[in-house]
Amino acid sequence: MKRAVRLAARGVFALLAAIMTVWAAAAIYYSNLPGHFLRTAAAILYPAACLGIFLLIRPFRKALLIFLAVFAALLLWWLLIPPSNYRDWQPDVAVLPSAVIDGDTVTIHNIRNCEYRTRTDYTVSYYDKTFDLSKLQGVDLFINFWDSPLIAHTIMSFCFEGDQYLCVSIETRKEKSEGYSAVKGFFKQFELMYIIGDERDLVRLRTNVRGETVYLYRLAVSPEIVREVLLDYLTRVNQLNRRPEWYNALTQNCTTAIRGHTVPYTHGKMSWKLLANGYLDTLLYERKAIDTSMPFEQLKALSRINEKALKAGDSSEFSIIIREDLPTPYF
Image (cartoon, rainbow, N blue to C red):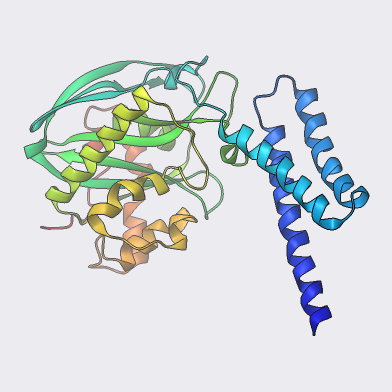
């Protein structure tokens, strides 16, 4: 019995040590160390050194302490890598938005509205706009897919009287010649950015330019809660102007960040569907946060907006057209 327990304990330790070593090697490889060759060499040498510690150093307790000390030193170095607002950014993420809040009046600076010719050929422009919070009516959620049905990108759009929409997309802030990578997203490769944009930019980019599949769901949330969520969003926008933060593909992404803004007011429980967010719409349906007057499959088919977005093109009524025939929850 004791032998079995010892073997099980060794197996658990070996698994944990392997996970720690693989993570550390990846952190080195995706670090800010200069030169691809240096990073690659260091990422290879680290696990080799860890293996050597356990093979060459006796007693085992001493080897374990050295292994943990080396890992702790590397972890501390990694944790201290600072984010920055000053890099050679791609043009579409070069300018940060900001908000001035004065009672019921909110003025948003640097609302993005790119003119796209292709996904890589575009002209960036911005405008400022003032919104009246007393005219806030609700909030909509866009879910767009580009590859796997498990993973999607989510965008919130706040709805005001007179068909005015304030669209916010939580994304990675990429440098020039840098592309998104889910793996890199775990290793401090991208700063976090809240893009406040016109729906003709943030939504049309995905439907009409990239050809991604996009669904639009109108959320069953009271205007009072929507107001608190929007103010929380804008507070975060201003914080990121002053103090940049790292994006994280698991803990600080487009959906987990949305949950952080909404959970204080909606008290929604954590669910695996927030991580595999391609199923987020099914979770919202189960929680009656979207229209439930029809079967979910019917609602989802109705909520696909690609054809309407293509029809709308660059029309000033883009936001109105993509919402045609969508059920609106009543309060």
